[in-house]
Length: 347
Image (cartoon, rainbow, N blue to C red):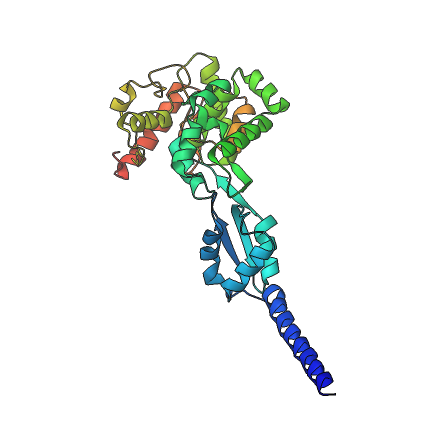
């Protein structure tokens, strides 16, 4: 009888111990372990990270980092850390957390437009994905890639069509460039290629002219008309005489792209640069900045008219007055010069 009581007591203690252990295991795996008050927190795991890196990143966000580590070890995550962007939801338990870090790599929205140089583009992209600006710039300027795809360093900016794209945060510089080449090829579909051929321009030249058109006018609805002016000049063998190209030439010569130039002077028109369309008849060697899709399509669908000149309309700011003859243009220009002098804009 005594031995029986002992066995019963041992069994009871075992059940209690098992219950305590089960409760601990349950809490470790299935109880909430988040310590943040917001609905979500984003965690970035860099390429080559160890589990210790993950622990350090998660420690401020979790109630109990040790219970998380135990579950991560049991589920085989500690030796299989995956880089990426992960979104943790408030109330997640350790099981949820490990599953998220194993398979939940979330894409990021990458947005860029109006970049003036490859250097600017690299800086813009580097704050949105893991690749740093130096790696991105090196990939953009890689001569092997440029030669294989008929680009030059001068016109390579035109390969990056401004838009919103989805990438995984841990995308490498080379992967980003490869994706952008695919987007470029997709953008230049059969319809756009046909229209480019009809203008007598290559896609690279269309983008270069589009960059000038966009610098001339911020009004999307006016861009086809401005493009028409430049196409009239181009088809008749005129120089483009585009002020924005002179401004770019000044920046390119001085190396100071932060310079703000509001007024082009007559002496600037003599600057010896392939970007100076007052001096050279041909298009510049590449875009003077990254044109929007609306500007590219404005060139491809330029307005057919008889205008050869235009100048800012001081009575309708943001728009321009267009002229068919030089005499008419000079009258419009005098009005603009008087206005800009009154503003005290000398440079």
